[in-house]
Image (cartoon, rainbow, N blue to C red; front, top):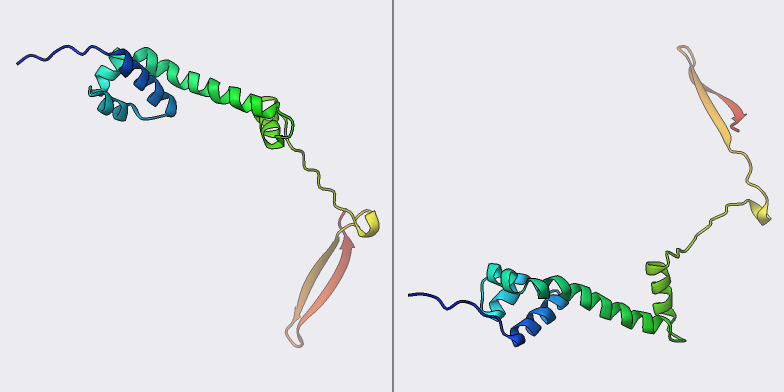
Length: 130
């Protein structure tokens, strides 16, 4: 028994392009179009290749329209961060009381001198670490 050769229809081409643009896996598209995944890739190569590009272009167009519409601040900020390279800059300044500089940290060194007759006796030396 011989198989009929696969011949894609215009409706199938539109369906493959649409599904691929939505990100549907090729195995699932092949199932819907009633062909094997290798046959899908052979006969619908162009549709599979351009569908994601076209879908991304349509979404980018919509985002651009939203970003350039007054009042849509979220879309404008997203566009500027994603496309124009804008970044939020967070600067943190640490100061002492009322904006004064922080005091230099104190370094405390503790030395224990052990006298067998009297037990451990701490001796503290204070210094500054600059």
